[in-house]
Each structure stands twice: as C-alpha cells, then as structure tokens.
Length: 327
Image (cartoon, rainbow, N blue to C red; front, side):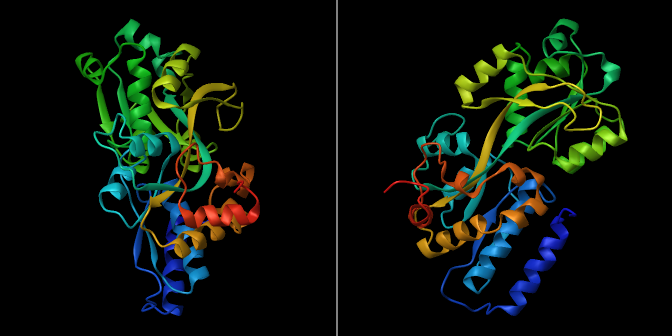
C-alpha cells in the first residue's frame, strides 16, 4: 500500500472541514504542534488530526509545523491549550524543569506514546571514517547537516560528538561547518555533495533516508557502548540496534540510541477532546501504517506507556476502559 503523503493529508483534512460544521462550539480550535513541514511528525500529526476531527464532528484540531522535540514542550507549556509531539525523555525533563529547560512546565500532560526513533549518523564513504573517535584523531573539518536548534537529532549529534571531546567550534576550527536545517533541506545538500555527514532522528526505515541512500553512497557510523551509556545517563535515551538491510547499502547491524515519541497537551485541554484523539489513534492502526511504516511494529496498548509522566484525564479514561492501565 502506498504511503500517505503530507500533501494528501492536508487535502483530506480540508475536505473533512468543509463537510463539518466549522462553527461547532463544542471544542475550541487548537493547534497540534508537530515537526517541520514534510517531516514524519508532520505527516503523522496531520493524520491524527484528520481522524480526531472526524470523530468529534467538527474541525477543532489543526496540525502545524513545530521546531522539534526539545522546543515543542516549551512552546505548548508557555501557551497552554494545544497538543504537541515530543520525545518522552524531553517531555519529562520539561515537566520537571531539568536541563536543557530553564524552568518547569508542570501543566504538561501525556496523551499517547507512539513509535521509537533511532539516531542515524550517516557519512560519505569518501571520508574513510569508521567511528566518531576518528573525527578528533584526524581533526576532520567535516561538512555536517543536522536538525534545527531544538530538534532531537541536533541534540543527539552534539552529545555524541561531546562524548568524544568534540565541539561544534572544533569542527569549524578544523575547516568544517555545521548546517542546522530541516530534514528535506539537509537531504538535498547531502544528495548534491554539499555536505558529507548527515544526522537524522527517525523511525527506521525512514523514507527520506531510504531515498537519500539510493541517490548517493553512504555509511552508518555506530555509536559505541561507552557513548551510549553516557547519553542514557544524561538524556534517558535507550540503546538500539538497527538490523542489517533496513536501508539500501546498510549491510551490518548499526549500534545507536533512540527515544520513543508521543503526544502531549496541557491540563486545561478538554477531557472529551483528548479522549476523542486517544480513541482515534487506537482505532486507526491500519491507517497509520500507511502514513508511516513504523506503526507496523506498534500496538495501540503501547499508547499507555507514559514513562512516568502524568497522564491527561481524558487519555487516562480511555486507557482504563480498555484495561491498559489499572485504576
């Protein structure tokens, strides 16, 4: 079955809105803060908004682009009344007010856990690079493309380099550069030989990465065990292994780190709207598989795994009805 594109989801959402009562005052109009336009998060958010709106008989939820996993909790926390997507470790840190956040956002609430993302560190074979440690040993002036500030891949890249005593300033001092860009922009730069290293934080197999690896040779750099332990202690990421042959040119198992992403909101979001979104997600596994292949290995009961973050009452009600959490 063909993957549902972001553009098609927007068209479908607009069509649904035209057939519903836009003046339905049952719920407020809210934003669903996702990822950059065209990203996996944006497509998934648009799909969930579409089915939530169909369930409530109106058009209260609109997917909008967001800056990333770190920024989204702060954005929603500062301006309550929206939904957002983030990684569960970042959501917990934002709730607590721990670094990288400078204040706590105690009104944040968990709605649903979705699928895990894995950190992909991809390099040109022409570099002859087999480990992150070699970057410092050879003082390589790499041309690196990663996500914008506040994104998961930008933080994970910075932390993986930092575990080996490498800073962005070092990369620049050695003659390289760091480009902080959306997923499509940095993929284009790698494809056109304008950068030699590219970082993503996506659920494998990512269509963007698969298409990229068809267009230009590439290798995956592993994250060594010591670095994975350091990152787990600091950021609550978990060790992951990407099986061989997930992507073109990837013939070996790749050791990396990952984080599960999920949906959150604030305590003042209406219980009925949160319940409707939770029910929409749980009932649409087959549809979500057409939006992103990562949902093939996901089960609706996984939604209730909140990683210790306080649940919104609307979501909790749904999970209790299904027996996925105990009263």
